Image 1 (tube, helix red, strand yellow):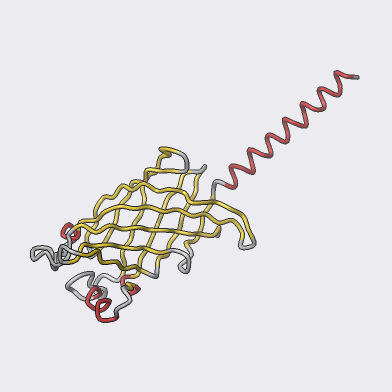
Image 2: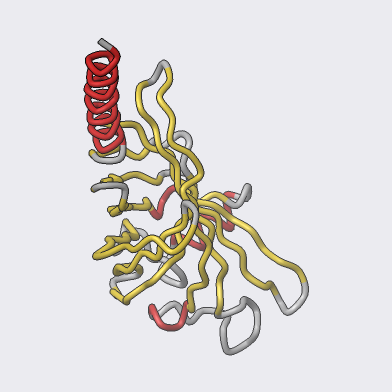
Length: 194
């Protein structure tokens, strides 16, 4: 009788473990739509060799795909969503001196591969296209959370990296020192399962 009970317990544990693994794999796979309202791209440049100048893009969209826990990204940023809290400055940044929003209305990042390098940290390799120029870009993505709530399953990622403006043909103010060539970028993404 004791042997039968032991076998029954073992079978129950085996099945519950199998279901748990299946649920875990399902939770770590799938496509997520980036939430424009709760995602942003912030940039910082050195102005006239003195203060740090900040701005942001308010329209960040795209898709995050999780495959067995590894992320891939297609991110699009609308240039005309640039926001420095100054309309005149926003217009200048949208002009041909900088981003040229009419000719190049979006900035995009598309990942090609990712590998886990630490606790919720991933090295993501891809390409960024800005101002009509495409360059390779490798970033460290940190998963900021993955939860299921009243909105369904959600996931968040954040990354920081530096871009060199002149590599994308955005040379305004570089030679004169009016605005630094190197620009720090922070991208924070929140996405909901499709």
